[in-house]
Amino acid sequence: DLSQMYNLNDFEFVARHTMEKTAWGYYSSGCEDEISMRENHLAYHRVFFRPRVMVDVRNVDFSTTMLGTKTSVPFYVTATALGRLGHPDGEKVLTRACAREDVIQMIPTLASCSFDEIVDQATDKQTQWFQLYVNANKEITKQLVQHAEARGCKGLFITVDAPQLGRREKDMRTKEFEGVSHVQGDEDEENAVRNQGAARAISTFIDAGLNWNDLKFFKSITKLPIIIKGVQCVEDALKAAELGCQGIVLSNHGGRQLEFSPAPIEILIELMPILRARGIDQSFEVFVDGGVRRASDILKAIALGAKGVGIGRPFLYAMSTYGDNGVVRAMQILKDELEMNMRFLGVTSLDQLTPDYVDVRNFGNRFVPEDKLFREVYQPMISPP
Ligand code: HOC
Image 1 (cartoon, protein in one colour):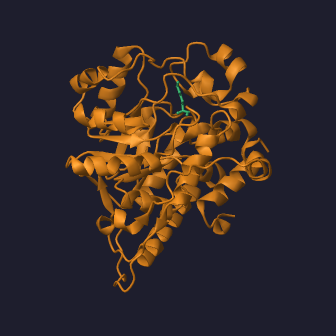
Image 2 (cartoon, rainbow, N blue to C red; image 1 turned 60 degrees about the vertical axis):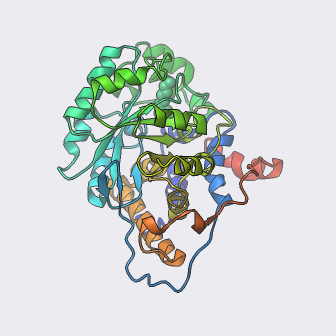
Image 3 (tube, helix red, strand yellow; image 1 turned 60 degrees about the horizontal axis):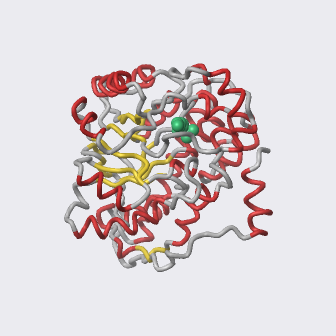
């Protein structure tokens, strides 16, 4: 039961053994051999701490601000599609948990509850952002964005790593599914369902022509801060800054799109010294997502210069297994870990965490799946139960 959930991986374990097969297949799938998906997390293992001792750590504060909004924690619930595959209340479960724990929620374009249902579920004090899949029909895109702004969303996160769907084989193996009919915009659902699994069915409207020139269009239709989600190299990060975006999310879509896209934490290490040298490391906000399972992962990213960290799958697993209380519990576990780890690190607020608190000398050696390890440990994890 819930009291036996000690860390975020525990939720994944229970989800894997209890979730409906198709829902598990869709949520847990990475692309191809799932190298990037695993690497997202394993890359954090190559960062060790350089803690300080003999610091008064009786009072520890891990609240922060993201895009000018105060929030109780340096993580947020990132956008994930099709919440109703895992729970009848879908994304509304996440909204309610965010309200209880003062966590920011990024509302997905491809939610299975309607956008308004999700916003209506929020309290007045809550902060929500909007994640946008750019529709090939600009008028639809404009309506989505302006509606999100009018309903009080505080940031526009434009997903740019998905001109088409990645090859998620675990999802493809479980072709039949429920819940997709909640999603608007799929023109050929039946065909998509038959051929490609849950993910393919929701992806037919995406604008593969999206490019840097389109930023002018987005700036003309909204006053919201624009954050480019899915940046995977330093060059693009700098381009987003030069073109006047307020920030980026270093992300490879949870390892679901391009196989061998690098782990976000790795790009962060390369990027932040450049932003510091240009004097824009404070004004241009860098977020990371993918592979975050522990507060230690979060604190490493913060020390290296991230403004906040997105978490997706673990909250979906918590939602799917234990509903509202599961997500709340997952957030509380992270808060407990944050407090403890900050004490051990000798810091009482997040702004004290600098790159001096981490040792990144192991970077440069990427994880390479060793046959035995892959066969005995990872393969059973990624195959359907
Ligand atoms: C080309 C459209 O984010 C997922 C979701 C939906 C992806 C749609 C991609 O499954 O990763």
